[in-house]
Amino acid sequence: MSKTIKTNAMILKISDTPGKDRLLHLLSSGGFFTAFMTPKRNAGKKSYTVDIFTYGEFVIYCADNGNYLINSFTPIDSFYNLRKDIITLSAAGYIAALARHVTNDADCDCETLMELLIKSFSLLSDGEDFRRVKPVFEIKAAQLLGFEPCLEARQKSSEYFFDITDGRLYLSRVNESVRLSRPTVFCIYKILSAAANDAFSFLPESENELQALYDAAQKYIVYHTEREFPALRFLNGVI
Image 1 (spheres, helix red, strand yellow):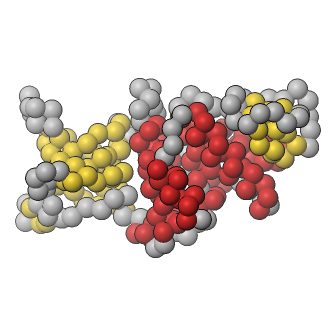
Image 2 (tube, rainbow, N blue to C red):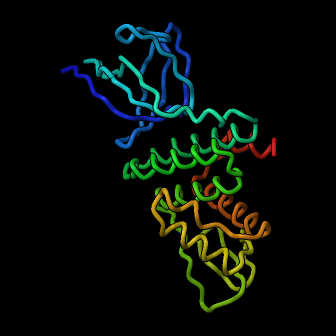
Image 3 (cartoon, rainbow, N blue to C red):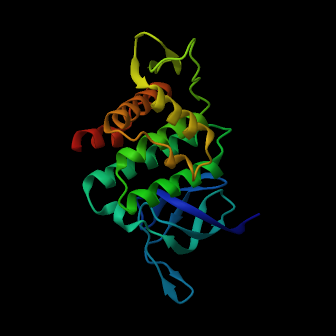
């Protein structure tokens, strides 16, 4: 039986169709789904348009054939400044693509993922350096996918080698490892332990340690998702 639902969702991607409709790829706290929308379709006496990375309230008609059709849309936040430069826009595109990949996990905590996504876009839109947003999202994404690093070492040290293949710490260099200081390792631990909205508060203070965290997080998520993200490749090409 057909029905109408109301939900808040983020637009991760917009695809054209052979007809006039556009296909919206949406993430809500209940999961990922796609829905058709007619551009500038009348919603009562109002008309509306949508843009990628916009978060808002959707009223959606669930047709008998299983398709979702958008009846109306009320924007809540468009994160307008994500579009201010190519680097910020590219970082947002990669984060959106990674979020979509995370939803492929049947046990995905989409509510936490949504909180992470909104916080990431909010920080980027407010002018935060993408290097302070992207690694946190990647670490939390790995956690949601079940690839949480095991931050245990055989003994205390001022620095460790983080093996991206097994997420463990070693006292000497191993294959596919990144050198991390003890404070940086503690930052990762705090990020993993924190709630979605608080995780972005735990970052290294020095530029060198921040870069090490950035490298470790990117290599770790790429290795464990076993895929290359075109949006990440593009981002790395423009920075």
